[in-house]
Image (cartoon, rainbow, N blue to C red; front, side, top):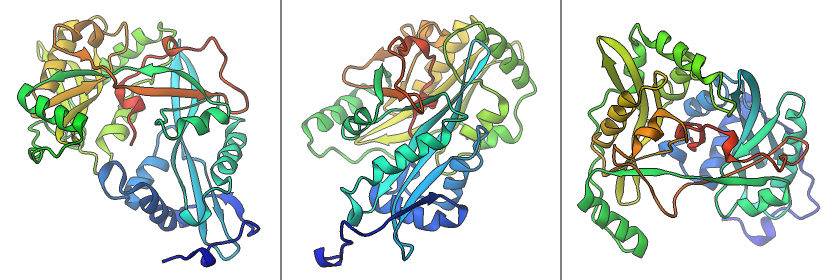
Amino acid sequence: MTTPSDRPSAAAELTVRPLTEADTPAVLELLTASLAGGPTGTRSADFFAWKHRRNPFGASPGLLAETADGRLAGVRLFLRWQWQAGGRAVRAVRPVDTATHPDFQGRGIFRRLTTGLLEQVAGDTELVFNTPNGNSLPGYLKMGWRVVGRVPIALRIARPAAFALGARAALTRRPAAAPRPLRCRLPTAAEWFAEPPAGLPELLAERAQSDAADRRQAVLRTESFLRWRYGDAPGLDYRVLTCERGGELAGIAFGRPRRRGPLTEFTLADVIVRPGDRGTAARLLRAAAAAGCDHAATHLAPGTEAAAAALRGGYLTAPRTGMTLAARGPLAPLPAERTLADWRFSLGDLEVF
């Protein structure tokens, strides 16, 4: 155990340098100690490489702070992302995987690494965005982030009795019955991408052509992006839902079963249908609710086919849920006129992974 006398003095020198592949074991150890096992329960080198090195938008820039004897004091990474707005690419980064060793907290490492990375990406990045929680949001606001708005989450309750008991237990902070085992009969995205249907390129091309006229920022859904995001993600257990019409692929959706405290949730990350096809969107939404969990959760961007089909499918915006979107430019605050109306999100764009 580290005692107060063992801790570095305030005058101890720290060096800030770029993160390298050789630093991965030490970084994973620090992230685990500070943030536990992450979304998969275990922080593996394979997951880290998938997320930060195999990302189709580019490798994640990262900085770390270390002592003269090589002891890791803090780490900070930005996940690269790319939006499309009216056919124009908008290069962005998302702050992720940040940790400061307990022995070095309170020494400004978080701010120092963040400002260093903002300067590093300024030459090729237009936007910095993330969804900080209530504890971290004040720190971001002090560093120039601005709250853009609250991204709502829609729920479809599949098992009313189990959902009511679990929600009551969560609200009262009382122990609930052990959650049911996670069972999902849907094929995994990894299995599906091993031999995707022949109609996938046509579906994505038709969707992209329609979306190019939308001035809102959205991710261009290419097969390579979807394969990386959902098919190749180690340990996240993404599943795929498909809908055919007349023997032709009409729509696909991706999501994953997960635990939410005493409840089981099917997190519906992406819904992709042909332009104007609300019927297929409704079928995919119903299938997500029937995936075997207590409820399904998703974000339904206004103006999309899924949003239009949501009420008929039983999806309702849940009170006191959602994510706070905060953003800035790499070297300047976000313009005041930028609002949530400038984005067309899927939940997969904002899901923490």
